[in-house]
Length: 98
Image (cartoon, rainbow, N blue to C red; front, side, top):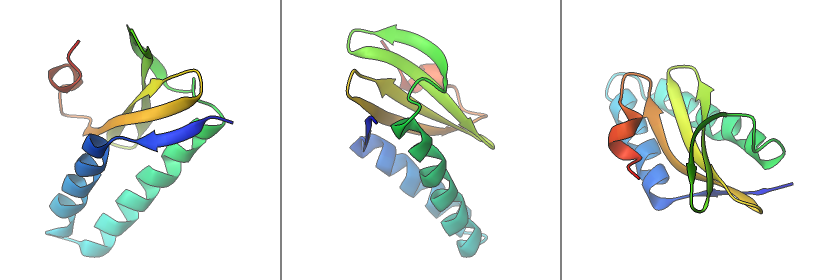
């Protein structure tokens, strides 16, 4: 089983998503964040489940889809490191520069 780590940047993305949704529906915001977090837990046992985005010197960057969101993560030999959580309408290329 791989370790699952969240970067500070990924945590900030989750907080931004929560804050945005909470403006209209605080209960929905809590559900969405809990669901995203829970969905990411699959990476502990299946780190290669997402589609390959690109190779990186530190491993592979992969994308796990969940609803309208994409969870970008780096697969290392001992861990999956979540890099960010992006709404489907956003351009990941802008944030995951080489």
